[in-house]
Image (tube, rainbow over all chains, first blue to last red; front, side):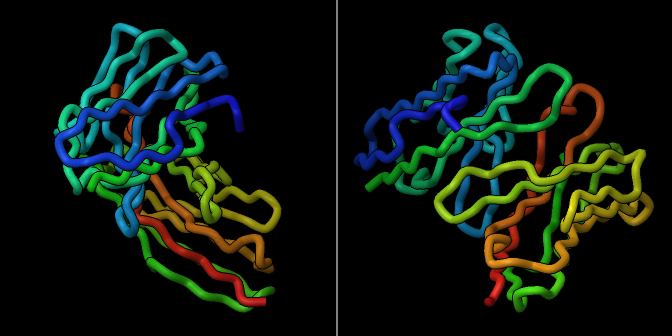
Length: 112
Length: 114
């Protein structure tokens, strides 16, 4: 589903490096989210944003930051990556009045 | 905050049999309960959802039931097919200001054996 696009799809980096994962959407949704998926741990919310001026921490925000550059763009940054941030990261969106999430294809990050 | 427990973590069934996945939640204020399916290497996608004012909802071979008193809800898949093989996630969302924060269960890997 090209409505929610994540870049890069795969990234290998080293401990201490700064990493940015980007998400853009063409669905016109106001709400955007970043989730992290680890095997056996499900999907955990990192940050969410209801509009450009609204940023909220989720369940596991430590070590991450986000930027909502425009309604359609929401980026996730790891200022100094560590190995336990190795995971599959999903961006998601939802429209006003809807709880239904539309996920991007995911960004697989490996921190060595 | 909300805590969602999901069981079992893995489930194998013969093609044609039924599969049941159960979830419990902790926040009595939660009022929205979706189920997402994630096929191997793909993104999660919503397959069915239910709100707290409804006890059961069906869509072809899948159904979800909700017991608000016991704070648990279940996904039922009948006449399973190989394409039902995937990881299924339940989730819960509270009402009010946090209504768009979904808390997910840890997932159930369903394998349908032909």
